[in-house]
Image (cartoon, rainbow, N blue to C red; front, side, top):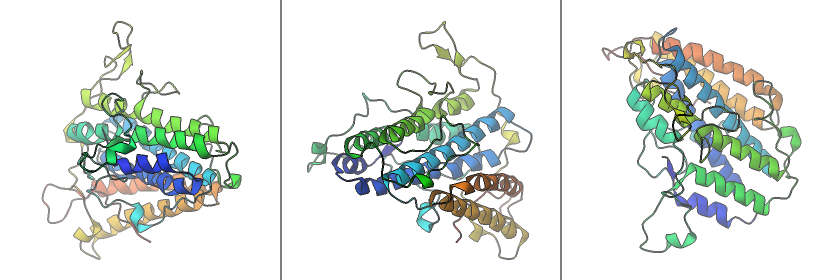
Length: 348
């Protein structure tokens, strides 16, 4: 389970004005984005036309992470803030902890798909919170000599929801013209955030799509939450409803096969600087990073007054997919047995 430094919960709990929430919601945008490069890298490492069930699971999760990033940006705009995306420090320097001071020692790599990566990275990122094991910390835990106990992403979003409910007016002050919607996403999950109840409902969508609910692996749309989709890959079976067991669900659905021979041998945490300037390999990774930069700029523009740009920006994802798969099939010069992985290097 990802654990955030308790200072973020404390900052939410002590906030008295909406502007105090701006940097914290910006942190949430950065966190939602930071999962996309590692998930995409694993997806790109699958050789074309193989491992279809796993590719579909990864692709569906990436799309929903883009949705969560959009929702968080809508919330920040609704509160009166300004999402900042096209900046060097927006992109983690992988291998890296994820944003907001992750406190469990997890460092996320850009690496090929393996069951170990699914279990020990992706499932850790999406793991639901256990309220009994990870309660919301009280302010008195910051007293001298008290060990730091970390909080969960779910607790962060719950504290954000409570604070918006406490201090925000019923009609939020942000410019409604900056709210982003798209036919790419259903109106039930991506809608204009105009009131504090809209913001509360939107936060519930982010949490339930990632973790499910406290009693079910299914989110409000009736779909399996991210954590359990990753677990499907790990255990090799689909999670389905099963009335014969107390939990109501079991991993007894169709088999989800995984053949490591269908995975490209990416060199982990590839950087463009590892490849010779002027070489064909460097040109390919530079093309990929240029497309990624276009995506970030497009998202920045979309969330800062040009919501009509979202569909075109999402279209860049198809370019990134083609360039990423081509890159992952390219032999890494000087590193026998490896191919080149996407680097997601920031470019202005």
